[in-house]
Amino acid sequence: LLCGMNVSWLLAEATARDLDDACLSEEAYLARYRGPPRSPVFLPVCVAYLAIFLVGVLGNSLTCAVILRFRAMRTPTNYYLLSLAASDLLVLLLGMPLELYDLWRNYPFLLGEGGCYFRTFLFETVCFASILNVTALSVERYLAVVHPLKVKHMATRAHVKKVVLLLWLLSMLCAVPNTSVHGIEVLAPKFGREFPRSAICSVVKPTWVYNLIVLVTTVAFFLLPMLVIAVLYLLIGLQLHRERAAGAQDGRSSFGPGRLSQSHQQRMSKRNLQVTKMVFLVVVFGLCWAPFHVDRLMWSCMDVSSERQLRVFEQVHVISGVFFYLSSAVNPILYNLMSTRFRETFSHV
Image (cartoon, rainbow, N blue to C red; front, top):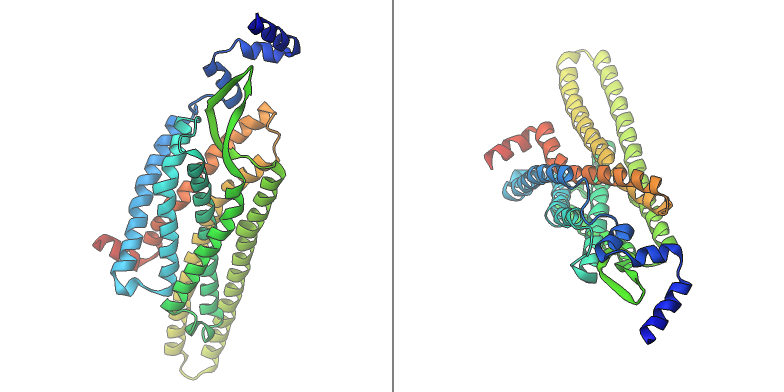
């Protein structure tokens, strides 16, 4: 009798949506409010991720191996590339399996709150460390071309190691805010029933806090660094243009310009090629990382109740994920294409 009275009271207070939910099985209820348990694009994304995984792990492992094994490869520039390769390996070996598991089983999240913190902290750290390493590498190139005298005491191995360590510590520190707003979220109990199988790793703090963090990190760790990098390479290009013009003028005014001019031209040509290669590397890096930040900004600004926006976001999320991991696999390929020394040491290993 008491049960019947409680049910009558619940039915009297329930909406049409509540009555519809009461008739659903647990699987159907979770599918309504959490979506399908397995992503519909799991198979094609899995194939793409596995190809990226094989190429990326092999390429970045070779990059680490040749820099650590061959003394001639332990240049200040290559230490930044070593740090970038380590970041890429962390993404591929730890981040990609978690991402694939999420696509295969959207819920429940089985790693608990600690696993949720670890995943968020990992992605944030490697994201920040990658862009900071590329920025530091660009600063080093700028100093080497524009201020060659100043770079002598800054481009030592000990100095570069300290810079790389500082960049990683800064990345870890800046990853804490976004990690702190994440946690395990479950659907609220309904009709006296709980849904532990609905657990997902998601934002559990107020949405405005997450939106602010995403906005600040996008500006501080993507837009601003890419602007700084663009300005640095513009200044490098202007410096090389001035040197080329000065060399041509000296060659015309000297009595024996042939040999001096040819030597100067060869040196300038080599420097131009090195700078062009680095610009190409930075452009590819920026193109691969841009969808990742667009994905975060879109999620923070969109109306989650709009099915149309959710469908668009799902497509953007898949594309951003592919490009995010592709950035971890493409760097060793670019090193191999652009550097004869890397090609030779890769082949040797």
